[in-house]
Image (cartoon, rainbow, N blue to C red; front, side):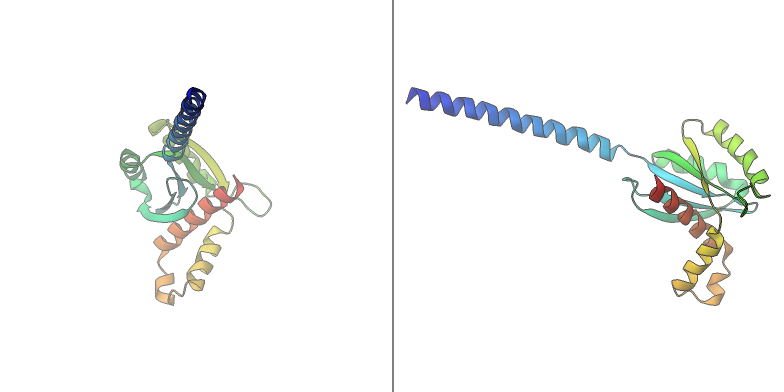
Length: 171
């Protein structure tokens, strides 16, 4: 009887230790998973800038909004004060021969200011060739009427979402 009680006590101790280990692993995993920030994509334009974000697990890309370009830093600072953001993705406009397009000249000063104003968030670039055409086709495929497809702000938001999806797919 004494041996049986000792065996039960030892087994209970082992099981108890295993349960505590599992709890610790679950806690660590939860910290890693739930401590992720969003990824925010920017389709920078002269007048308007499309914005898209991921969910907290960085799996799903969704259009967020379009803001006037002259208000982009106010928007970004307000957004990151409310949501954790780990990374900015900024579209990189390229020509068919893989050289930078003319609009890259507008983006470079923005990137410089972004790194000074919000230095704690890393910035990566993603090729944005054809995103406007793909966004327009998405609107057609989604059944939007011709009048709704003229909404350039929506095209910019969808373009930012496509840029973000491209990054997620290739990361």
